Length: 319
Image 1 (tube, one colour):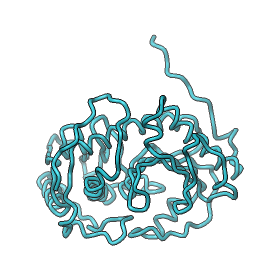
Image 2: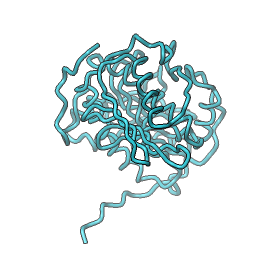
Image 3: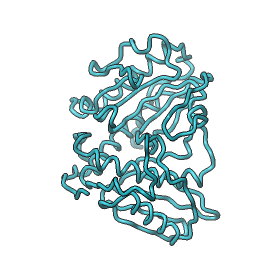
């Protein structure tokens, strides 16, 4: 287990530096904790296209499920990465709070489910991680137990900066677009644009996820951009972009900034987070990556860009 050893950035700080090797143990544990919480939302929320009903959202203190139906009431589960608490808040005024601290996944699972029961919330989840090869059942996972509060806070600070930029990027598109949302399966923040045309059947093959879920998620042509903290395949925090189906010539497309490269294994354009974090204007650098990779997909796949796009509308002046 690890204690909090990294000083968190101050509120409203600039983009924080992130090092995957320094926080990979906390990342692995937190990923599994979010899966437990996310699966509760999955079991209680009506299905929405492309699995958008299961996602989490960035907040001013962490990430949240948003309200989840529970009969005549609702409840919400929020990770607070400032006070390092998990808050379960019900619309009838009842609240349960558990501290975020070094603990095993099995201990987190037991405590979280017990606190739901204390609120009168009865829900059962499939206790096996998704999108993780050889995942350990939540109730048996005594392996993952790290939580460095400072590192968790830094990751959330990066998330709220990226969330803001992705939301700005989303305003340039009037076709179908996802919200900016956090997928607990892959542990990534993403926004996805759609051409409006159907796509070939996705091959599936994602670890511990039914093929039909991927096939429904990719039922239509997409251009997606996202933020991922890293993993065994690529031990670096990155931004990524991809199109499905991948049009001919996509891998050879010219995108910006110059540090962005096509990753053959992922079949995605990849930009190191450090290139954005260390830029003179991180927001402009990230917008350039998002826009240029979208244009590569849209132009090569012959999307109707005139019908799907619009210029940004500036913020209103005070009246």
